Image 1 (cartoon, one colour):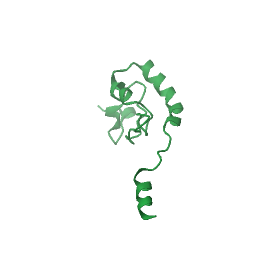
Image 2 (cartoon, rainbow, N blue to C red):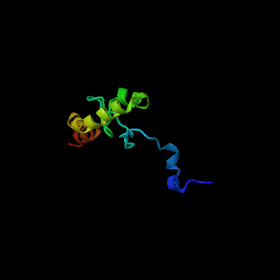
Image 3 (cartoon, rainbow, N blue to C red):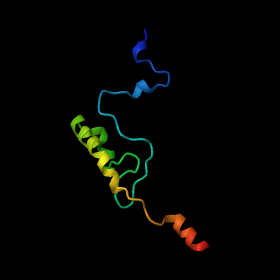
Image 4 (cartoon, rainbow, N blue to C red):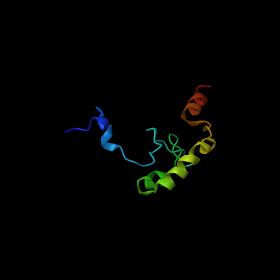
Length: 88
C-alpha cells in the first residue's frame, strides 16, 4: 500500500530527508577571488563537507550566507571588456 501523504509525482520524495537543506540553487560558479560559489555563497570546503556536517553546522553556515554576498564584487573587465577594447 502506498503512503499518499508523501507521494510526489516528480520523484522528489526519494531525496527528501529530515535535515537542514542545502542552499544550492544549481548555479555552481566559483568566484575567482572570493573562492565561494556565486549561487549559494558557500566555500568549496563547505560544499564538499555538507553531507558530513551536523545540522547545527549546516544551520550556522546557512545563517552566514546572506552576509557573504558583499564578497562577490562584480569583476571588472572580463571577456566583454577585452572585446570592447578591441573594437574601440
